[in-house]
Image (cartoon, rainbow, N blue to C red; front, side, top):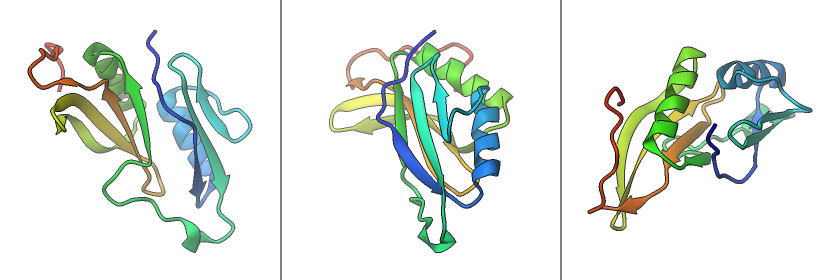
Length: 136
């Protein structure tokens, strides 16, 4: 199995139980002490119940968290797993370009509107980026 590379992030949520259920379902794992931890691909996310719902401020267009995978094949597998498990998508797989590099990415959205993106490692624009024949 592949690994993501990301730093842990804590998200303030409106309904902790509902959020834990959503993340556990889409990742296909069980929660561990208010954390979503998928040891198969190295992703960890902490959730915290908001005492004041006005303190929940997800970014509208930018991801709160990025998970990075090594290959397009890994990204495609992850995307299919999320789709099969009923994830809400902020955007479907696409090419991204930034400062002379490119990557593929997609993002899921949670019940409070937080966006979590998954992308391949960036490569130089002139390098070949493998496209999965069934993907994206």
